[in-house]
Image 1 (spheres, one colour):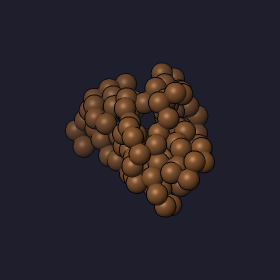
Image 2 (image 1 turned 135 degrees about the vertical axis):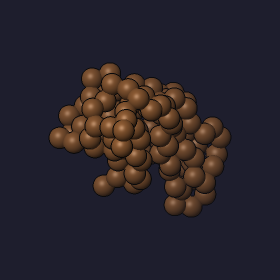
Image 3 (image 1 turned 180 degrees about the vertical axis):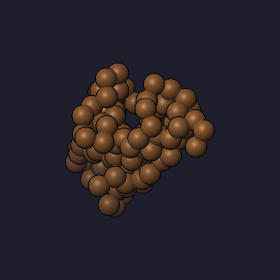
Image 4 (image 1 turned 90 degrees about the vertical axis):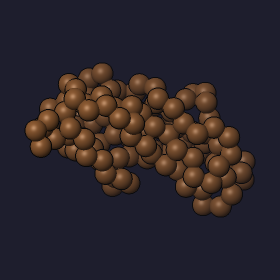
Length: 113
């Protein structure tokens, strides 16, 4: 189930954010391997050119709700619904290393919409 929803027009470029929430304490996103993203179409098929590429950036250091982001360029995407999934590793203040996969539902609309 997607954790957030973003609507953007074809041709628009903007960052899409995923957020982690520490159950208690803080989380530190691991820079190596860095976060990556996969963009899926409405059928769950990865979109060519958006499969396992590096995230644009992420909050560094220990934080209670660190974010990761990807600058999505919707120029070549047809109108429709997509799911952007981040995959990253973070270490909690409890010392445990966990893998997180925040996902965002993205609706791309026609430029005239």
